[in-house]
Length: 315
Image 1 (cartoon, rainbow, N blue to C red):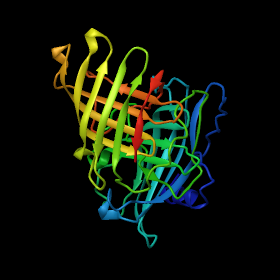
Image 2 (image 1 turned 60 degrees about the vertical axis):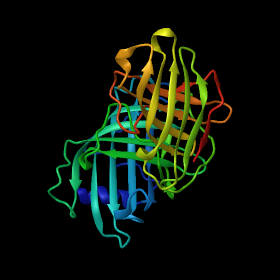
Image 3 (image 1 turned 90 degrees about the vertical axis):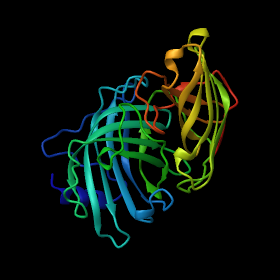
C-alpha cells in the first residue's frame, strides 16, 4: 500500500480502522482469549511539550492484538500509523509500521513496534525505517489519551514499556478490549501538556510494598522531578531510591528513580521504574526492578491490583 493510500485511509474518518494490505484476510479475534487495540484518534500537540510544533494536528491509527498475558507482552501482531500535519494541512511527516508487543489490562494498553514505511518531506534523509517505537493508550470515557516514543527522534525504547498516555485527543475511536481486569476510570486530569504532577501513597501488592512521594512543577519537564520511592519486599529486597523523572496524565503516573540505599549493596546506583494508576476504589501498579532495563519516565503497564492503597495522584 502506498503512503498516499494510507493517508487517504486516515482521512476517511476517525471511525475507520486501518486498512489491511491487499490479499490479507482479517483475523477474527476471540474476546475471551484476545486483547486488542483498534481505532484512530486526532489531537493538537501541546506547546509546552512540543514548542516547535505547538498546535500541529497528529492523527494516530492502531489495529493490534495479542494473547492476554499482562506480564508477557509477546505474541502480538498488528499495525500502526501516525500522520503529523501543519495547521494549514500540509504534511510534515507520515509513518507507520508493525506491532510486535502488546499488553492490555482494563482500559489501558502499551505497545511496541517498528517503523516500516515513511513519507517525511520536511526531513527526507532522517533514518526512520527499522527504528523502534513505543505507544500507550488510555481508553477513557472523558476522552482518550495516547503516549508515544519515537526511536528515530533519539529516544531509546525498552520492550514492554512506554510513556504515560500524555497526549489528550480531541476526537477518537480508539478502543482497548481485554478480558484482563485492570486500570479504568479515575479522575480526568488536566489537558495541559505539562501540568503540575504529584503522586503520593503506599501500595501493598502482596509480595512487596511500594511507597511513592514525588512531584514536578507545572511547565517543567519530567526530569525536573524530585521525591523518593521505597520498596519493601522482605529483608533481601528492601531499598530506597531518589526520583529522577516523573510524568503523569490523569490518574496514570510513571516515576523512575536511582537506588541510593538498600539491604543489597549491589543495587545501589541501579534504576527502578514504578507505574501507578489511581483508580479510586482500586489502585494498580507495575514495577521494573533494578537489574532490568529502565529508561527515563518509561514503564510497564500498571496491571497489578493493590491489596491496600492510599495512593493519590494530582495532574
